[in-house]
Length: 464
Image (cartoon, rainbow, N blue to C red):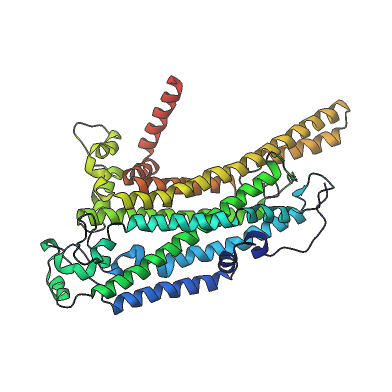
């Protein structure tokens, strides 16, 4: 099949964000501009924290100031700007890979009478979901922050105090005199001499959590847009009423069937996902620190370390010692979980995992089907050539079959996709239940445990 006739190329904002002007303005800007602007907003937050004396609150239980809450002070000036800049770079990649696939003849019209190009059809699919996506992203972001702060705002109402479930931190620092004796230290007593004002604390909290809503909203909006993009890509070439056809490149030296233009957006998306899941895992450890009034590293160097590197036991044989800590209720750190934590962690893990599984595997399924169809066609052609004793043609078809059989289903390569997905699922498991991540690390680091798990699994399959 011949490539589609050239048409004026659509820009990223027109193709992906035609009915989302604000999102389009952000995610189609140069990545460096997005990073600098978002980072400047985060730096302003730090300056505001210093101005209202919330940046450093030294206590006997560690510093509870804004600068020492790294899921705020590092996330907003550095990590969130990096994620937004990478998303902006991927947006341009999403556009360019569609244009390249059309130009290279990898995606063609199924019917010659079809007047809409693949890029135009994709843009139409995305624009239909533009408004629901924006409303949904903002609504979920609002719910996440309200769930995270349900026990915060009541403490600012005259005649009311903060519930015991609200752990003392910078967002309740005006009430520092009532934090309790466990936080007493010389530096803490000095801080008590000049605590922040209630009004200043409230205004800073409002600004900070509004910025969190904006960050969650932008993140959910972009992840939703990327999900819809992948679904539209697969639906247009393999849905119930496909308008276009994927034509694999058989003799592809990169072993990608001509889909290498999609590899960069796959790799960058999975890299963003790893950053988000790593933050979710860090947030879980931060909640454990607050719940147990202990240094941040204490849970890692005790519970998790005993799972990954278990001490010798006179009664329990190795490698079963890796699992003994799992029967200790404190290892699961359930005291660090409340309504806000559950809501936040679920929204930071499950939707992303759903994106990785459903749309990515959907594309993988259709690409695999097309490869199998081409292999079937080549097998038939091989038999016909063999029957006709056209041996030159036999060798050519046999070579094409071999090339196609060696190709990767994932556009970014099967091995690389597997590594990315393994890291993502491990971090997601760690964010929801940290001992699970420790077990995964133990399996990766210990050949004995790895062989043991593989043996148990094989026995279970055989018994089933």
